[in-house]
View 1 (cartoon, rainbow, N blue to C red):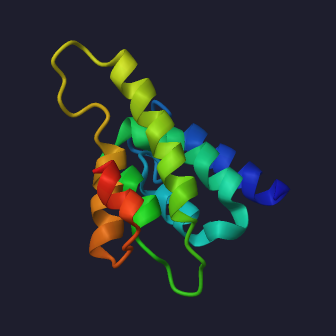
View 2 (view 1 turned 135 degrees about the vertical axis):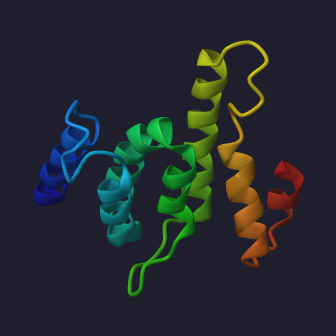
Length: 126
């Protein structure tokens, strides 16, 4: 896990850095890297997804909704718990009347249901 952590720290530093012309600036490289880790590295994926979700929620959500060949996706319950906590933090920090804050969990639930997850709790959470 140490090598993955170091790589992710570098990607986060460059991705959030001031040099917008740098090849690693932005979230794309981190999203791709995290998608390639999968369930075997759930804690790292969840930890390093936070900055991506803050910077670009749509691309951040793709970490959990795009399956890369040969990689076991994260467990839905782990992702939902993570996104619930993220949404709660986003809602607390959002300006009054911001309807977009707190919607990632719902969007992930919609994706899970569309992908065939038929758990009644998913429908109830919506």
